[in-house]
Length: 215
Image (spheres, helix red, strand yellow):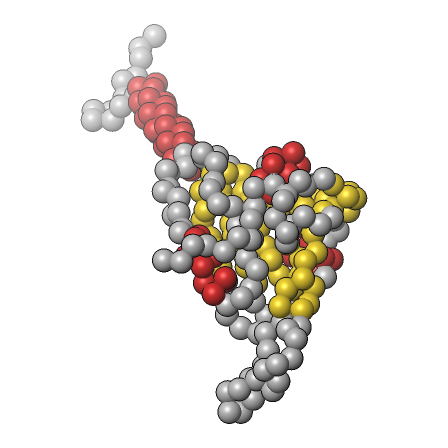
C-alpha cells in the first residue's frame, strides 16, 4: 500500500498539533506566573510610615482657651499619636487619636453633650452599655463615676464632667456681665478603642487635665 506524503512546504497534521500543544503550554505557564505575580503584589502591603503628631501643642491650645483637655503625659512604647484636634468655635471639642502597636487604636474625646450622642459617634448604633467600671484616676476632673460600653470589638469608657461655657461678647467686644459667676455645662470624657477593656482602664488611669508648664 502506498502512503501519500503531504504537499511540499506543508507540515503534517501530527507535527502541527504537537507544536500547537507546546505553544499552548508555554502561554498557559506564562499566564499562571502572571496571575501569581499580580496576586502577590496585591497582597503585599507596602511599609507606609506613620505620621506622628505633637499632641502636646494641641493640648496647649485647648488649655489656653479654658477648655478642660484630657491627655496622657506620655505614651507607652509602640503607641503613636496620629491625630490631635481642638477646633475653635462655640462648641469646642478635644480629640486625640493613637495607633497602638501598628494594628489597634485608642481615642480620647472631651465633648459637650450627653453620653448617648457621644457613644453613637465613637461606637456606632447599636451599642451596649455594660454598666459601671472602676477607673482609679486621682485627677479631680476624672475622679468621678465611670461607665463602660461596647459594640463588637470596639469598647469605650466614659464619665461626665463639668466644663465652662464660653461667654458671648457684646457688639463692643465686652461681656454682658463681667462680674457674673462663670457658667458650666455637662461634657463627656470618653476613652475608646480596640485594645480591650483592661488595657483601656490602665490607659484611662494615666490621663490628666493638669495644666502644662509655661513655655
